[in-house]
Image (tube, rainbow, N blue to C red):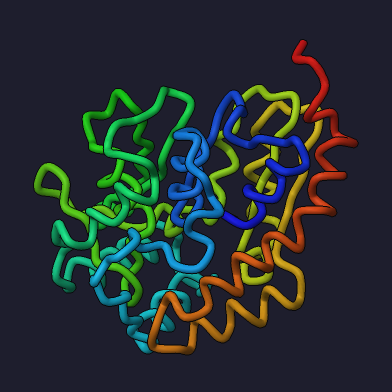
Length: 265
């Protein structure tokens, strides 16, 4: 996602200028960085601050596989599945300041740039979706860290005594939050794992002249699969960033054709 956005800027398409950005999980990081005007190329090789001695997060492949198995189990009621994942998260040690501080560097600070950014999280106990913005009273880095907190990958984040986890537990895209728009861009890193009908149903609730969807190509899927089975969550970061750069050419043309650069009505 970072590579896509960085290369789109070089095509004259600044996603950070969008009227609304809904960030879920990794999309929360990139969305916040975009609105803050961050140089996305600055973390093409490593998302940690320059000179950081913090070790990379270590995946728990078995726990992560269980989470995906629960979320993909169509015999379970969606709310039941979300609460089940929430219980897994609450059994883990919550995030410490050392987990959240690197997010400040990634997103360009701890203050919300403006109200255009909305970040999606899930209340681990209830399984319900929460949408945070600049008026929610949650520091930006904390909100971003919570939105990508998936059991087996990153620890849950505690805010006001409640545990919050990855917004993707509710929906990988939360595309229904895109309201009345001329053009909606949906970036779906895990489109290959999510039934197309889910996003289609979300988009059916919106009013948009044009919808552009971007998922990973075959080469990018291979990178993601290798990352999911390895112990170091950051090992494939540079490759994934380069994959985004590569896919940006085609996406740029789609957005131009959709009228992204046209004057607003």
